[in-house]
Image 1 (cartoon, rainbow, N blue to C red):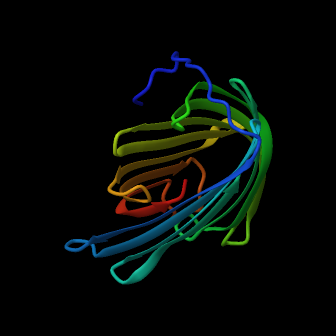
Image 2 (image 1 turned 120 degrees about the vertical axis):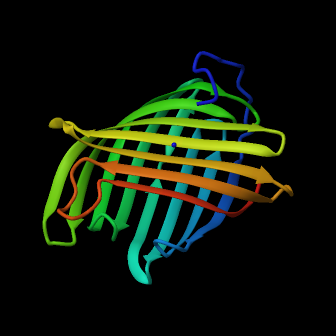
Length: 234
C-alpha cells in the first residue's frame, strides 16, 4: 500500500551502545463535497526506542474520525507495539496490538504474537526492505455482542526508502486464519513525505484494509487517501 529489489544486500552501519528515541507525528485530512459530503481527519504517532546495537521497540498509534453527510461513519483507534532483537540480517519480533473500528463494527480487538524476520536491505540512512512472519493470537469483540478468537499468521513486507527530500514508507500485512485460509485480512499503509525542513514535511497517506469476514451490513474494504503535515525528531 515496490521500488526496491529484494536481492540487494549492503553493509550494516554500527550503532553505538546508547539509547536513542525517535518520534514522528502526522496530521492528515480530507474534505469532499458534491454527491457525497465527506470529512475525514487522521492523526498518527510513533515513538521508537533503540538500545545499543541489537534492541528496538517501536510503539505506534493512530486515530481516524470521519463523517459522511454529517453522520459519523468512521472512528477508528489502532495501537501497536513491536519490540525486536536484531543480529545481522536476522530479526526476532514480538507484537502487542489493540484496535477499535466503528466502520467495521469492532468494539475491541486484541493481538499478541511473536516470530522471526529477515532484513534483505538496510543502511545507515534508515532505508530498509524486510520481511517477517509472526504467529498471533487474536480476540475480536464485535459491536453486536459476538466474538471471535483465532490464531493467525501475520506476514509483513516493509519498505523504507529515501532520496533527497523525498521519503517513502510502506507496510503490507497479510493475515490468514491458521484454521482456514479463506478467512484473512490485508492491511496496507503507504506514506510519501516531502521534507521542507529537517523536522517538518508534507505527507500523503494511502491506507487500505480488507477483511474477508465482517458483520452483516459492514464493508469488506476500506480505502483512505489523505494529505497533511508531519513532525519528526532525529
